Amino acid sequence: MTTTYLATSAVAQRLGLAPATIRSYIKKGMMPEPDAILDDRGRMLRGWLPTTIDAWQASRPRPRRATPAQE
Image 1 (cartoon, helix red, strand yellow):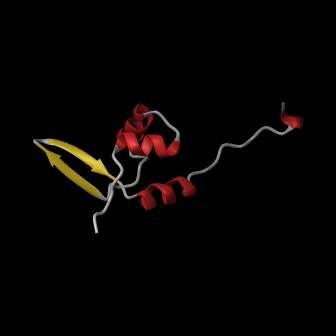
Image 2 (cartoon, one colour):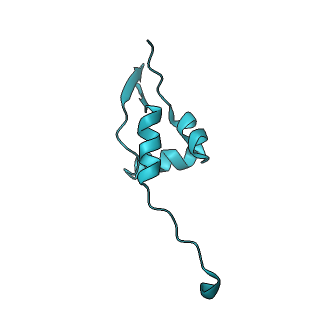
């Protein structure tokens, strides 16, 4: 069975974010460690399992919503 990994753009699509946001998260160390790294002629490509991304997303803090009294 083949294992499917999500590249940066696929992670962005899964999370509803821009690829640039995911690249920023990577640079800031905010993303989980990749499950795979591919060497494409010196260009290192990261890959995450869908379950890794889903678990990471579920563990992220959610922004607070303003209640009517706070508006």
